[in-house]
Length: 299
View (cartoon, rainbow, N blue to C red):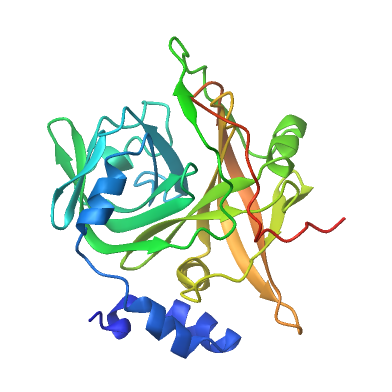
């Protein structure tokens, strides 16, 4: 049985206690372990997409980056080891981090076809064909707020365009964000990194200025790993995908959670940099079926 004292650091405990879910968090936390179980290994082997979060060693900025490949490019190669063939392109903001032995990384494999997701956090080890992650934490999440996309195809000949870097959001990027139904968030703390998912109906993320966006933190599994990390270290990275064209928009900055008297939580993210890459991913997914758990965004 997992020792929940080792699972949660002070930041997560602070949020759990404020929301009044510490006992539930302790119960859920027992599902977190270091071993990649056979069902998790089988899940990984079917995935064409893996999102990795880390802090760039040269700038200290936190980013979330996508990796893709034919199913089998990410796989379990030991009871506590996940291996990845390939890596990010040289223009990716995490290219240095993912080529540095010992980098603390958080990863999430999300399958829109089955509305399942798996997270594995640990330390990166370089390999001849890419890298591996020695697992510190392995766990699954429920399908809440995850949109179903029933199929995908790999588009032959799709070539990534040149990455565009800006210090703030352009008008087109603002529309990209407000039209999204999914994004990934990378966070860090003193002992590691984490990558997670946020989903909702389009409009659930609101852009309030070229350097600021907000979203409501919907009720989830009570672990508060993301908000716990942000309570300890506000650095964060967001990743938005165009599930049809493969264009990616990565944002880096700082995020802070606010709590209303009625218990609602809202996260405010301040943008300090963006990287947009046209046609970055070769995958084209079918249209989404929105999760029945999604609240209606405010008008």
